[in-house]
Amino acid sequence: MPHTDTLCMACDSPACNFRPLAMQRRPVGDHDLLIDMLYCGVCHSDLHKAANHNSGLGSTQYPCVPGHELAGVCIQVGSKVTKFQIGQQVGVGCLVDSCQQCDACRGGNEQLCSKSVSTYGATDNGSGRAETFPAGRETLGGYTTRMVVDENFGVLIPAEYPLECAGPVMCAGITMYDPLKKAAVGKGSRVGIVGLGGLGQMGIKLAKAMGCDVSVVSRSADKRGYAESCGADTFVVSSEQGQMDAAEGSMDLILNTIPAYHDYCQYNSLLSDTGKQILLGLHKGIGAAMIADRCCCRSKVGMSAIGGVANTQEVINLCAEFDIKPDIKIVPVTELNNVYTTLDEGNKDNLRYVLDIKGSLTKDACENWEEVAPPRLGEFSGGISVCSVLCECCWLFWCCKIC
Image 1 (cartoon, one colour):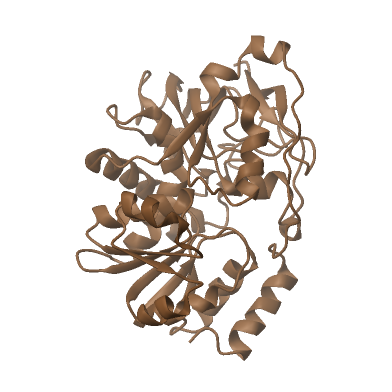
Image 2 (cartoon, rainbow, N blue to C red):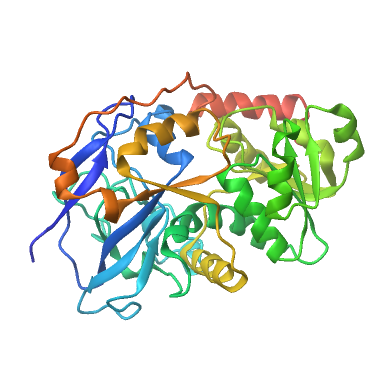
């Protein structure tokens, strides 16, 4: 079968200057879906990858096409597909393959599989289910007009759920839902959300739907009104020591969404005796927290990263049931560079930005493309590398920060 032609938004260097680029997807296989892409959310992880922030774990391959918040419509199915039908709304999250045989995969935690394949910036694990065209290149993400994916990594988006809101659920939704579910939160659980951006807003809404009392912790009072509009019960200004003292021991679970490295241990005082803070941002602290959590059963810090396909299906169903929608702004692909600037500066608008793929990434638009200014990106520090994670571990253990 022929390959699938697609238009992508790609960058060719850490400057993250995105332009349209004609590329190809592999032919639709027996177990594959072909998705006509309508929308794709823009995640802070996209910025980290495109800008090569975590080069200590492997340098970004260019051209780079990020995007793991895909939402579109199935327009073709392979001959052996059983889970989807043409015309259904389909999402794709952070993964496009795993071994599907290990304990993690069988338990619905494909993200923990040693052979998991990320939606972009990864290589096929030998199964062929994430193979590219031409073969051997890295996977291309969702800033694209067409997506080919194995049916086991598609997520059925309920027909009544707005497609433009679905993409962020594939990333922000599952990133917040997975640790909430694993902590078995419910009515009366006290959950803290540190950082109120695209992740934080979803955390509030999901935790409230699950019956929790929710506190938001932020550096200033500027976002108090927004936090309350999302459903927060309590707001704590972390720069006000009096408020931090008053909130001591008041939270059973803290989900720390701040994407850049910071002193995350300052929030441990807010935890109850058996509470835990879960780091979600992609910085050296998340690696150290993972090691600390595995080495010390009483560690106050742990980490979480995305979730499996089954839980992703659960969270989109939950969002449909409770009418939970991320606060989004739909933008044309011509605004992508500006979105990266906004994310790099801290996303003060608290929004999830969603690319209008169907309406703006078109052949005519590409043929008449006018150059736009590259994003303004500041200096990045605290990236993930073996050395930085080990140093952070030493700080956690030697300074007794994990207890």
